[in-house]
Amino acid sequence: MRNAISAILLTCIVAAVPCVQAQEEDPEVQAKIKSGEVAHLDHDSIGEFGATRRFDVDIGWDDGAGQRPANHKTRKVRYVADCKAATLTIAAVGVYDRTGMLEKRMIVPPGASDPIKPETGSPQAKWLKDVCMA
Image 1 (cartoon, rainbow, N blue to C red):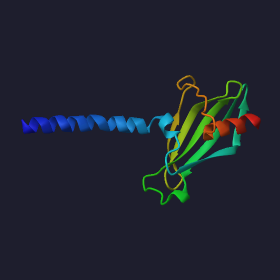
Image 2 (image 1 turned 30 degrees about the vertical axis):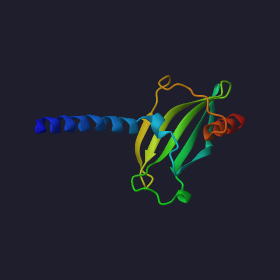
Image 3 (image 1 turned 180 degrees about the horizontal axis):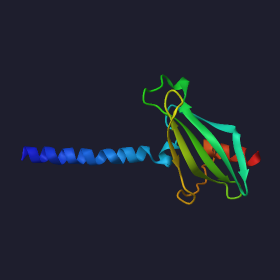
Image 4 (image 1 turned 120 degrees about the vertical axis):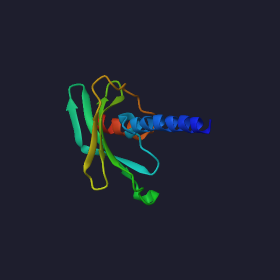
C-alpha cells in the first residue's frame, strides 16, 4: 500500500514538471515584468509597417532590487502596436543568459495571440503612447 501511494505521488510530481516548463516557455509569461525586474523601450527598434508599428522592450534585473538571482534570464520582447485600436500584440520573445547569449527565441505566429488593451498607467500603456507618437 505504501509503495502504491509513493508511486502515485511520484507520478503526480513527474506529470507536473512539464506544466511548469511549458509555462516558462509561454511567450506571454516571458513578456511579463516580474518583481525585481525593470523594462526599457528600445526607441531605435521602432518601425512602421502599414497600419501597425513594431518595437522591442528589454526586460532585465533592477540592480536597485538587490542581488540578481543566479537563474535570472533577461528577455527582449517584440510587440506589434495597432495605434488606431490602442492594442499591443506579442510577436516574439528572446531569452538571454547571464553573458548575453541568446538561449531561446519564441516567435508568436500572427493570430496566435490576442491583442490586449494596456491598463491605464501601466508600462505597456506608456510604450504604446511613445511608439504611436514617434
